[in-house]
Length: 136
Image (cartoon, rainbow, N blue to C red; front, side, top):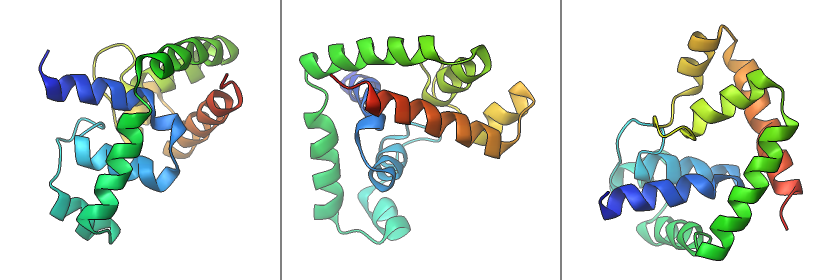
């Protein structure tokens, strides 16, 4: 596994620890949705951010990926997954690539599971809220 893949893996684990706008930047910048990574210029244009603002978001996210934080996130994620209905678990696994098969767009998850995009997003938000509430 190359350094880029290691960074991707760690960043996926902290998506629940950053704001929604930071999450969108990280997903686009590092290709966490499976659509490939984008340059700082592309991300900056899309979100109206400077390179420095993007770097700060990246540094914040990378700072959350220390081993201790990852262990806590893994434990919390298990707690959250156990609290979800099976369909909600499947949505979370597919959206964030928790099974190692990469992240999938909400639209793709909806199509595969026979749900609406809105239902997928509601389940995703519920899981992320539970993850934040279960931080130790």
